[in-house]
Image (tube, rainbow, N blue to C red; front, side, top):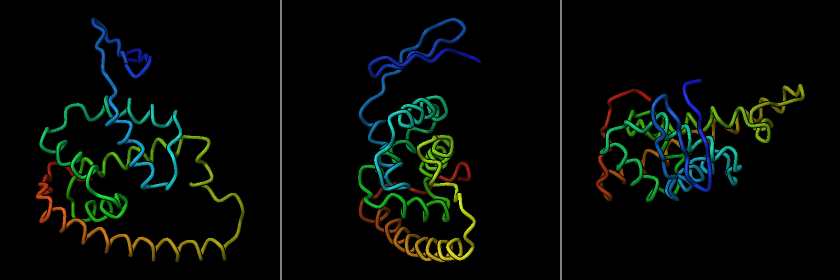
Length: 169
């Protein structure tokens, strides 16, 4: 383990080999975790998962390009259907930071015991499973079409730069 992470009243202290560096968690990061979780699961984020998401975001994404971060936070602030927007952005390889944070939230949620039922069907029901597959396929097509329209509108109306293609999402 490379360091000790201590969380106390909104402040995370990461103790490295030679120094202690305070990192303040702002309300922006709390809103960020809730918006991404809400877009995926349509519910409130569990507190433990929000803390893990914030810590992982600080650790993984602290060295991102400032322009990409600004575009990402502008999107979080202005886009209502984040799920649809992210799907279209991932397909068209726009705003990879948003797609990466969505993927990170899914990885963290898969390990959370309260959310296990979202990922695992405990009963062997092939007819129900087939219906679920058809339903989510149609839902994904609807969300993709809506997201593609939103992607175009965000570029034109809000003038948020989305052509940041440094890494694939």
